[in-house]
Amino acid sequence: MTDAKQKIDETVKANDVVLYMKGTKSMPQCGFSSKVAGVLNYMGVDYADVNVLADETIRQGIKEYSDWPTIPQLYVKGEFVGGCDIITEMTLSGELDQLFDENGVSYDKDAAEKIREANA
Image (cartoon, rainbow, N blue to C red; front, side):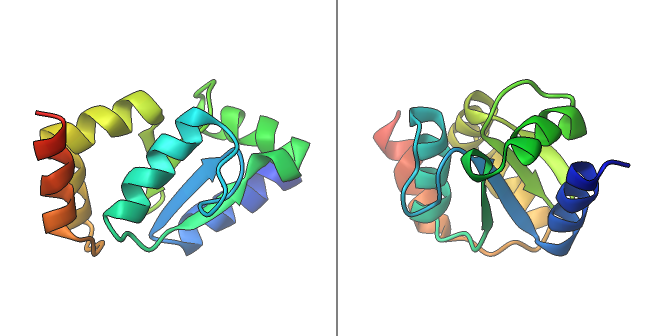
C-alpha cells in the first residue's frame, strides 16, 4: 500500500464521517464540495474534512482508494458513500438519515427535514 493510500485508510477508519473535498468545511473551494459540506454542516454532522488541494498525492490517491474519479467523496464508518450527486439524492430521499442512524452518527433530524421541505 502506498503512503497516500495508507494515510487515507487510517483517516477513513479513525473518523466516523470523513469528507475528502476541495477546500475545507469552513471554506470550500468548489461548488460540489461546497454543496456536500453545506449539507453536513447544516445537519450538524461532526466530520473530518480533508483538503485534497493541499496534497497532490492525497488528491490522486483518494480516487484510486475508492475507485471513484471525482471529488468530493464522503465516507461513513470506513465505507465510501459517494460524491455530490449521490449525497444530494440520499439527502432528499432520507437515505442519508437512515445511513447515519444505522451507524450511530448524530445529526439534526429537523435540519434534514428542512432540506427536504425546501427541495420538495
